[in-house]
Length: 150
Image 1 (cartoon, rainbow, N blue to C red):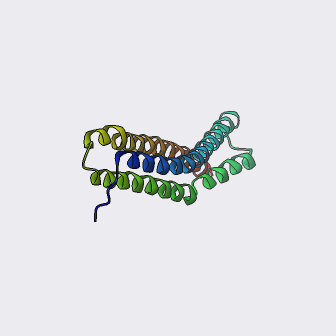
Image 2: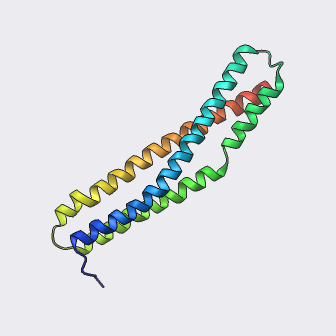
Image 3: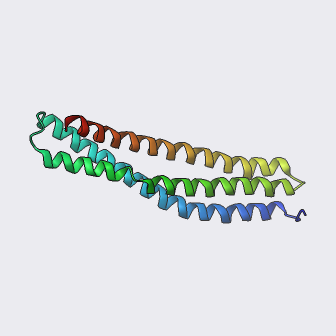
């Protein structure tokens, strides 16, 4: 059964859903960027330790870097990213379905609502994947270097 949804109703629904996404996304990106900053700082400490103590005589600071790198590779970050990404994908799909119920003004809906939703999702996906991949690789470098030195 198709419900009569007007163009303004569609815009209102999109606004409501993206307000929810904004709340989740802000929290997530704050957490994700803090997570990556901690990894980059740990990597810098590791590089400084290796540069100033190439023989590895100071084991405790290196062990601390290793544990911080292991901690940063927790599954919790990935699960949170998957949950928020799935929610965003659901919203984009829901907006596409709602837009298909509005027969009039289809071009305007595509230009003003659907395309920006899709672009937003694409940018979100790209940025969050880059942050996750960079963080994952940087922490792996410390872990691998510690294991090789150990």
